[in-house]
Length: 228
Image (cartoon, rainbow, N blue to C red; front, side):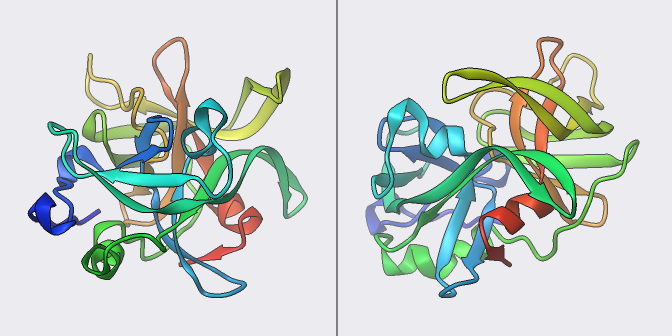
């Protein structure tokens, strides 16, 4: 993820690569931008992030979404509104995957921010993760970290509409650095890349043992009707 440091008074962003791109919903729920994408239907540019971030604390569709211009400062830049998302199990190529994903428009962003979004949150290609391979991410909470894919078909238990349900076919990622987690609260949504630079997943949570959970990116693009 390449980002540009600019003066917040000019409505630009000071998102440092080591801190990821912090996105905040209307109620202040923080997360990390996954990447910029386009809606297949109308080619509109959108920001991909976690559903539990964009819709956290009962946020609704068409409510404001902002980027935090500096991890150390309270400045926010409103970029647009929530559009739609999915949290739960979806079908893709005859398999059931759990996803935690949503998109926000950038209709309200200043022109200089819109012009820079593709470089800030670029993802050139997406693919599938492989068990045992090294992956990395840049999150708003823990910065840049490296991990190993421990499982590509991890099953978790989550709450959907107040009901406990199985969350199948996710990634389980273990940190490669002793005593340093791969991710933490505030990193949700961060793009997980492999050594080739392909986007393979987006972070969604952490296990009680401290490993990270991420949903596969290909089913996310499928269910949200996105393209790069």
